[in-house]
Image (cartoon, rainbow, N blue to C red; front, top):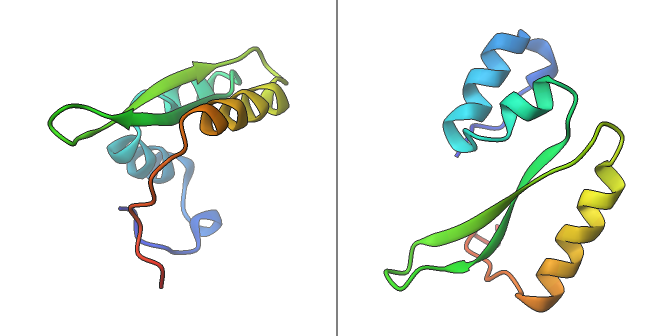
Length: 84
């Protein structure tokens, strides 16, 4: 996962490159002003996580977050990060 650091002190290209390594399909939408997010929806039979990508019109961040909340309520996300 990306190392925690002062992202605001780095250039935009370096931030996009770092973000694209972990979520390659949302940064191009975000650069155009169209909000996008990858939302976990479960796991494949192999155990690998799977997600759906949501993209909205400019200014629709609240709608996307509400939709992600509804998806999570229907398919709760299993925590995989450490509790530290």
